[in-house]
Image 1 (cartoon, protein in one colour):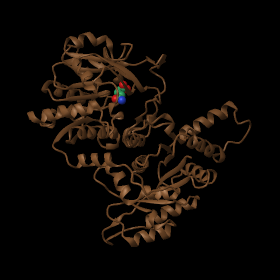
Image 2 (tube, rainbow, N blue to C red):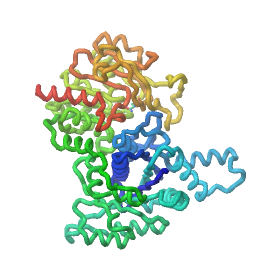
Image 3 (tube, protein in one colour):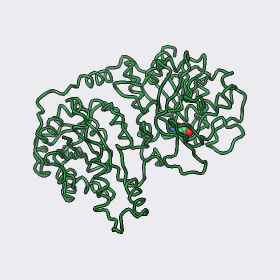
Length: 542
Ligand code: GLN
């Protein structure tokens, strides 16, 4: 039997609903249950692909090529189960499907309404494909009271009545702010938020209360009474120092026990959490540290680089070191010499990015790393800029550039208009739609035997997730290879460059894909483990 847990949020946004959902999933998994996680996003974009990372954070790409919410990254990292296109839906997607059907005449003259058409579409999405799972955790984006969220709350309310008795639970994540002048954790915002939820017909079963200190008995009692939940269902979700400690802290507070009790399941046995204890211990007790520069463009909002930050920390876990990140706006290097900023750092990473702003700064960072023999990791845009740099400074092509920034006589990076996906030819036009039209999802690559990249992966055949519109131009391969930039990884048909490396440099690797999306705490990605290992070597030199 499949059981549903709906996770909603109240009081303020950014309480970490995605993380809370992922951590609960991990706890249930540690008890041997099969768990699936899904996310409902109330905004009107069809997917987050066209949204600015500074507004919405990173776009998480799945193997099957969907551009999804960054919470799906938490889901994957915490459960090890790869997310798919079918795990995330938005209001925009639902309306697009409904309106397409309406135009086709599929509704046979009916008036199309939020209830039942939109709510039915949401319910169908929630219920689809869950047979193999013991638990399906469904996170609703935004906070209760948001206008866009209403159809989603209505749909999950209806499901509570339609699914078999005892197969649904509602978990509400709220905030208990500490007010210093009163010296108290305040429960009123939670009371209001639960009142709001109840006004639309949803009675939460469990309250997950974010707070920065223990919740006194009296406040627990008050919350239970005013919010109409059991006292044991008021769960403290106190701030912890690493996100990988969250499943352990929820276990301490009895969240899993309460969820199981709700479903009438036995929570008496201990979940297997040893591996969580191990990584938490490793993170808290590093044996050394390295400093990595991230030269990017969205450095103001760290959520824009969520998976990257996690993957670097996994590289640290693999090498038992703390990875300290130095965030540098690449535009700074267009005005100033990079040396004073980068001296003393042990590795330089230029992440994915879009558009011309800051590109020359990234090129200067790549040059600094190449010339000074500092470990350099270029991801997607970071690889493209490293190739432009090598073309200009090594291969004698001063006008080398990317056609992403406008017409150029030397398109060392050019628009990708045709490529193979499996056996199918995919085609794009320069003036086509921006949404969902990049080279997206998992593609295989072949790595040259004996190359650095093959050594790092310990093999020559890989598959990684992509999200790009431009590519390094094969027409420049010979000239670049003659000067030591090796095209070591190629698409299986040999037509698209997938990785480059600088021969004779301790660690200079560019990859056209996004390895950070597949790194997990229990399986750190080999590129990140190797990059951090190289940074440790570098730290011994400086
Ligand atoms: N803007 C570049 C492209 O579209 C790089 C994209 C990225 O870094 N994800 O090819």
